Image (cartoon, rainbow, N blue to C red; front, top):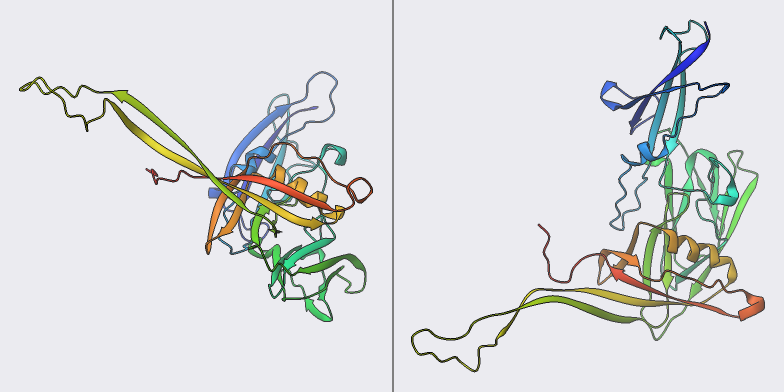
Length: 328
């Protein structure tokens, strides 16, 4: 009998690979061969993404899930093939993405989880650096080595190493502890005039990445409201009080915005700015709180040393909540 249909069971879960139970079965899908087709394709990324919850409170916790698929082959009579079936595959799911130029279903970085080779930190301030633990043997920050271990659990697949204050470089090595995979230069910025703001976002690798804005900050807010016209005449006296307005305001609220400037950065950081603009999850460290924000700027002209000499980016954000608390 010829292959006709593939039935796919999709399990989504946390923990170690293969530790799923029957309660982790999220979808059972079927797809059939049509005409002369020899392949059956399932698109599961959006289905898995429904179960990937992204939250951040300055805590840098690994956010990923295991997705296990079990494919069963059926013939035209819905009988299970006795050979080659079922087929089990395991995938690690993160809130990442590939660019069009990367082609179909690209595999993301398996070591350092930032695109840029440059990090900017305020002086006397420690930073965070994300890595994919499975593909890294050790990380050397200046002259200090940190051995990386991977027990397969989703809660440590993405690890955030602390960059001590005033460090100068981060080197990421393969699992053999000898092959250098990436070198990141750490620039410590002295800013005596303005207060630097830390913005954290999920980058293309699904990791939390920090970007400091060092220069001028401008805050503003926009008010929305509604009005209605009321009757102020007193029935008993047929008069009205002049201090009682005819126009009454209601449903008054506001949204706050903030405009930030990076200060001068090199063009290697263009990828960081680009991923910030594309991110659906962005936060700002503001008055000792971590608050959600949304990039209002919708267009960006990338700057280069050849065209612009020095590059400073201005990015406008809107706080992702109303000024007056109307959470219900």
